[in-house]
Image (cartoon, rainbow, N blue to C red; front, side, top):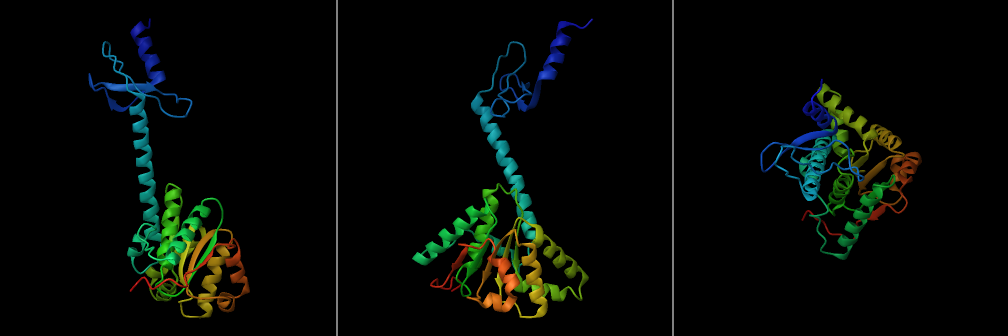
Amino acid sequence: MESVADAFAEMEERLFETYGIKCPKCHKLLLRPKIFNKKGEKMAGACATPGCGYKEADSKAKERRNENVDLTIKAYKNDAYGYLEKASVTSSLKVFSKSFANYSTGTVNEKRALTYARSVSAKLCDETVHALLVGQTGNGKTHLAVGIMLDYLKRNNYMKKAMFIDFPQLMDQLKMGISNDDIGKKVNQCLEEAKKCDLLVLDDLGAERDSDYSLSVVDTIFRARENESIVVTSNLAGNTYEERYGARTFGRLKMHGSGNTFSFNGIDDHRR
């Protein structure tokens, strides 16, 4: 016949769980209910040792939940940055050190540029965006494009995938890949990721050598990103895009592009 102690132990095992926290008084593992409270959160624990009577304060349980959330976000961040570094095509990973926080805003135009970039990042969380940052070399287009990408990841608790492609660098690697299987395999994998990641930053479009092959690559990327978010930086101006890449490709760039273009004219060279 089952004893009262056995019945109690069975009920305890069915209704309560340990969670790795020890009682500060008797050092036994605390127990907490397996069910969640009305907010969908785990409740505070208590010590089951006879005569102890220690109960964990709700504030401690909340603090622990926050720590668990922070650890989860940190894990997602590591994964997101790992994907970013592996999938991207760039001459230097130092480009990912650029952010909104270290962008210079010494002039009115620079402040306008930063405000624009922040608005794009916020909009990306709710809708598909085709953003175009245009202007001369060195005036901060790449800096803010990377800033948009990193801020977008942060806003989504790093649960999205983003990648960066230096387009002239991509074209050079595609050419090298013709005679080098390892490079060819890696760069072709990057192109595949560029088609399906949540956000693509395409940097320095128009700086590549003009050829039928480069036009084909641009068309491939924009065809895949037709209804997916993309941020493009370029020093091309006006109707040059349509003249260079064709009406069909330019039409895809304009989709989801209303109000998302910004000119960096009037901003000094940041590289000086």
